[in-house]
Amino acid sequence: MTFKDKVVLVTGGGRGIGAATAERFARDGAKVVISDMDLDEAQLVARPIQGLAIACDVTDREQVNGMVARTVGELGRLDVLVCSAGIIRDNLLFKMTDDDWDAVIDTHLKGSFLCARAAQRPMVDQKYGKMVFLSSTSALGNRGQANYSAAKAGLQGMARTLAIELGPFNINVNTVAPGFVETRMTRATAERMGVDFDAFKIGAASQIPLGRITSAAALEQGTPRDGPLHSWGGGAVGARGAGQRGHRPRPLSMQGRVPRHVERPCEPATRASQAAFW
Image (cartoon, rainbow, N blue to C red):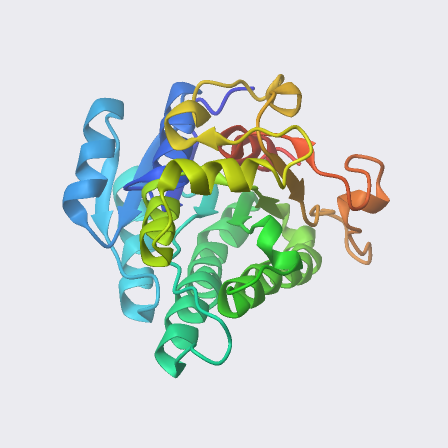
């Protein structure tokens, strides 16, 4: 697969899955915009791949609109949006604060909504576009993650709805739902829980059918063709954009691609590039 001369915008691209996704698209020939709240982090990713770094808080409508406007203004168009920006504020229900809930919902769900709404404008005009939301296997529920699970499940519902709305304009909307990935965010989770990170990873791997996890550093090395065959952690994919008026996209579990309730090995950066073709 190639994205030669396509313009790709990755939010949360300064680290982890977002950074690996940006690097993956660049390797496939895309012109990549790396967005992150921390401009220094975004620039560290952008320099080696000759990308454009933009500081943006995805929960702020004006900043999001400005990010998309700058992308189109400097690069001429916007072909692919990957919403990877996210945070965690894990806690059991009786300990979870209003701020814990609002911060996670606003970043994952509202942030992706604002980015999608801004990105659809140039995509509709050019009659072409791809959107990929980073969901999670936690969308099915995970102890101590009521906020995160709700946000990630919401992304899948929003993707299905936007696939219906934007399909007639030749815009595909999909979700990618990775399992456990070794990143600074998952390391921070272990620290907050007071658990040794190596023990934390072993525990996570024990919940995956293949008994393996992956790391952000390894994500970019796969190819879109062999991604489903990698011996890494499990992930499922949400809705597929139809591109035809009146056709309601079905979950991939109903289309024969991913057996229902079965995790298939994948690596998220490659899945994001694959999802942009569905």
